[in-house]
Amino acid sequence: MGATNCPETPRQRMISMMYLVLTALLALNVSKEILDSFLIVNESLVTTNENFTKKIELTYSQFDKQLKINEAKVRPFFENAQKARKMAKDMIGFIEQTRAEVIAAESKKTVEECKDINLREIGQRDRYVEGTRYFIGNSESGAGGRAADLKKKIEDFKVNMLNLLDKKKHTKMDLGLDTKGPYKNASGKAQNWEMHNFYYTILVANVVILNKLIAEVKNAEFDVVNALLTDISGDDFKFDEVGAKVVAKSNYVLTGENFEADIFVAAYDTKQNPVIEVGSGIDSNTMVISGATTKVDGYRGVGKLKLSAGAAGVKQFGGKITITAADGTSKSYPFNSEYVVGTPSATISPTMMNVFYIGVDNPVSISVPGASNEQVTPTITGGGGTITKSPGNGLYNVKVSTQGECTVNVSAKMGATSKNMGMMKFRVKRIPDPVAYVGGVRGGVIPKANLLAAGGVIPKMDGFDFNVYPTIIGFTLAIVKGGDYFPETTTGPRFSAKMIQMLNGVSKGQKVFFEDIKAKLPDGTTRNLGAITLKVG
Image (cartoon, rainbow, N blue to C red; front, side):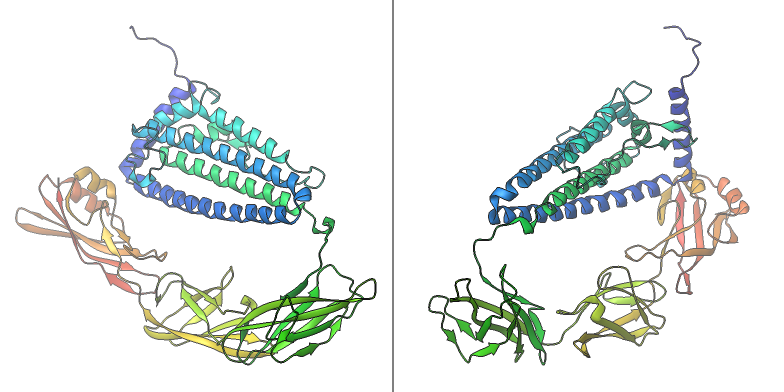
């Protein structure tokens, strides 16, 4: 067919621009770092979704228990919760199918192969042409592709989920999953949800966006099901049985302390003063108490029980509570319970590894069985260390400054006194040396174009789990030409203008030497990272 003189459409101009940007990114050698960041975010989302599933299942199990207590009252809420479960399952299934189809479109695999594939196993994760065609179609607004179907599904899902709730009680319920925006592109021009999320979005970003939507669906499911559960009012239940209850302040008691519990008759008149007898156990049929009997004073339907902790181990007790019925007769109700006596102990867990490193934050988790976080006080000695509270239950941050050894001691306030609960010793070490890279390699053959595009020397903390960012403060570039050795030294991580001139002059097969590479670390030390020898390919 002959050539035409039709002007480029906005989409065609965007395609051309995207190719230019992609080429520039590849030349600058930053694409891998960006893709790796997406992988980390995606793996975090996958973990979050797994944890959300466990949390939601706990709420459904609470519904099952409530249904057994009072089926007539709970049944309508239970059935709505099951509807919410099915709608969420269907919505997630649609998103997962979408995820598999877009991966298949870009990776040339079958949809079935892509359903459980690990994103790290997919090559060329920066593809976007087939994904854009799949999500956007041939329309300028995205109305002709999967993105429009996905948006419609999400909006219907939100409406149907909210319809399960009493709108008078939950007027401010917000399920997230926003598709209205406003959204804008890089130029500040308004966009719809479809174009904002899926127009020329690379494959790895598409997967992250879809996994984020799954997380939001699970969050919406939890909010709706939890709201349904709270709508079941215990005040509306009609009890037809009366039984003795034992409510302990804690079933875990330290040696030397007292076990304390409230013993009462559930749903009974608080004006009564029950008679409570306690022993080591009771036969619920004969109401005979075993062991020495102790009388507990009762007031307003409640008795305050105190038992000596004694030696470590499981302690059992039982007895009966006697109250006066409406007809004047006395009725007794048996009870049996137990508590655990433990020796003082503390759990000190480094959340990264079993050493503390100088110059970085060292997170630790500290807990004491039977004590709340507010009762626990950790201290540190040696290593020039300090320990401070971090956000979260039982989380702390340790900083050290001197190599050797330090000790974390933990005390807890039990009653009116503070007790030493234990200690743990830690080694204090300096941060390990980073590893220097040029163009993503440490040796071997490297194309000349990649060598020039590298732009300098990059340090990495291979195998080190802490967030440490070393800085290259200088290195020497050397080449051998005509039997003579030509070195050039610079400060900082980037190639100097002279170095770039030298690299432009090297030929295939010639060796390039990066020597005396020095890096500065957050602990204030300067490290010599050795040398790198590369052969121009």
